[in-house]
Image (cartoon, rainbow, N blue to C red):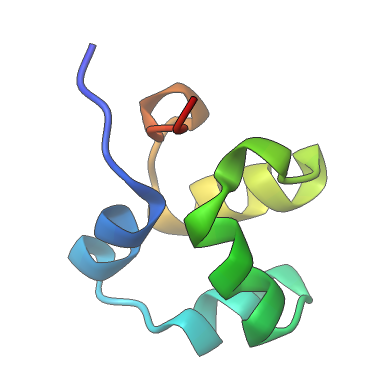
Amino acid sequence: MFQITLKDARELSGYTKEEVAGHCGITEDLYRDLEDDFGKTPARIAFAICSLLKISLDCIYIRG
């Protein structure tokens, strides 16, 4: 299965950090932290991000 970082998925989708954060109802600072460590993202926010970026949750690379 192919996996991509959250940052790469966002950039390929053409969204800014501010746009993704606004869509999810979170601060840009929190979104920036999630790009660094997506593994601790609350499910509601993770699904909102993946929905916006049109990518499956299991395609996001999580460091570990």
